[in-house]
Image (cartoon, rainbow, N blue to C red; front, side, top):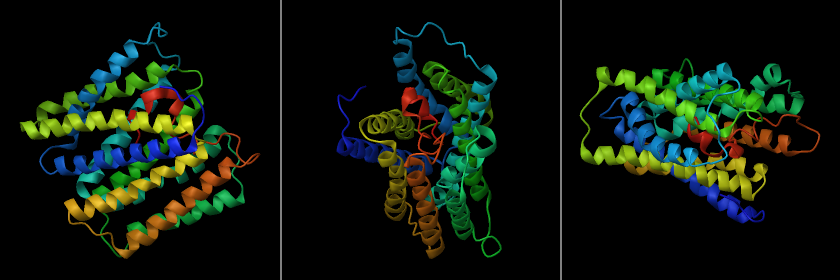
Length: 311
């Protein structure tokens, strides 16, 4: 996939479509979670995504082998990706969609924090203030002490932490590790781990639900390609904020399909988190502000569909 010349409008539109597909993917996950284990959903969704993905990777004549240059870091990144994905799936099946997204949107804040000791990033006062304000937004969403914190809330936050750490790992090795390795190893690990759990949690899948699981795999691949195209057609500072459009779709899907209406705390908290994330993206886009730009590069468009395990 290539873009002949930069086109912010094309990039904006394709990225918006990609994140809309991601939100639809998550709504389907929530629907399936009423009848199936998260592990079973992930296994079948990954299986349907793995087949076309592996064919595309294997069809690349430039790839000579699939041995990782940094095996332990690739394994770590794969484990973090699987953890982030599993926790996010669990959160979607147990919490309102908009509430889960509000907590997942803390990922850029955590990336900023983790990039200091792990990437040597220098974070000055303004970005620190944005992180602190964003974390206050997380507390507003969670409301500890005034509302019950469930396993779903902890799962959403664990997903954010694992996703942030995975982003940091890939920033360290991504320029030297081959895209085929970064694409296939997380998927293979997911299939092996979820497949090993399947005998204990398997529930016979109805044909319509099997179709929805196949749709999950299709949406994962298609959405990632849309986001890749967006990053190639427009500056990262234009595309990165588009991830927050998922809260719009989450609110719409939650209201019409799951009878969910975000309360005032979720609305206020998510607004603060999003505003903080947008500020961090803006600061990183400024010249001579950020050496690593870990948040702007968190979607890794240069690695093709390696972002399939995006959580």
